[in-house]
Length: 441
Image (cartoon, rainbow, N blue to C red):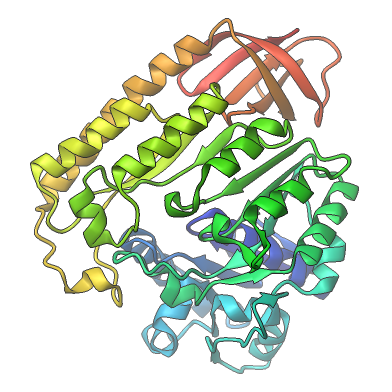
């Protein structure tokens, strides 16, 4: 008899990827996915603690689940991900209706912990695993052979953890030290995904371009090999670190059509003073130089970014530098956040001296500026020719298809003979909000 599972996911694409892994592990146990926690026999929260807001949402949702657990005593509730790793056993005390806490390093033992919980055993599983040597397979071989695909996309985690220890970031404490997978395992998984229908593959890592498995094999060599895989239409990656980005990678992107003309490159703040306190290990001048070279070899490249406003010590002059970077680079998309103190980070010892109102005003300025930049960019694309991977039918317009440009812009395409999974050449005819409209050439 089948059972039902509901998974609530917070945070980045790595968490989304982990959630899909969870579904895959639970399927052999006859769990089917449901969209309503009221219908579930098992509820999992896959959590993020990068910022305070997602963590607060976790505790709020757990509070809402308490009455459900009282009505359904057999319901199993588990908390996974970064909050689970960060707070550990204290979460079991804070939320007695939670059956188990599961850290990222123990993800692949999920079926075992669900089975234990079904017999009334509560537990906290946040111990770090030991990965032998500098090359590790933290993805089991059976998973590599399965090549799980989500729609037309496959997601491959090529690294786990991070060694940068940016002063504001909790990731090294919740996902551990950086480990790179073997290229053989990554290539095996990629080939399996293509065989199972993947047209586009995303490489994932907290600092994806620091991938290294020896003196002579790093991120460049991995991209080079993957870009030659037969049947792969598009290859993307997220998120690279500016410190580890170089002109050689830009040249490879320019030379290989399968490597999409899109890079998400977080700069976080426009002031070198703030970047130094953040421990970002790059300067704005260095960042802009790399962007300039990238745009010289790929004039149509689209660049998105992350930034933090209101970091401790950020003055009006520092913030003005951030706005100047936005004006100069003219990103296709910006993910801005108000600074929030994360326990256990180096920045926790700094005075959070930027008032909340000032943070909110600065965030509003960033959003407003970026909206104007994006509107002009969208308008400028009207009349241009783009290559689009068709991902789904348009639910509102019969005969229309939705997809993404090479630069990762959302687009709706009209024309005869269209089909999901096709890579088509189009002419952009208009735009509305963040969506482009086009006709097949």
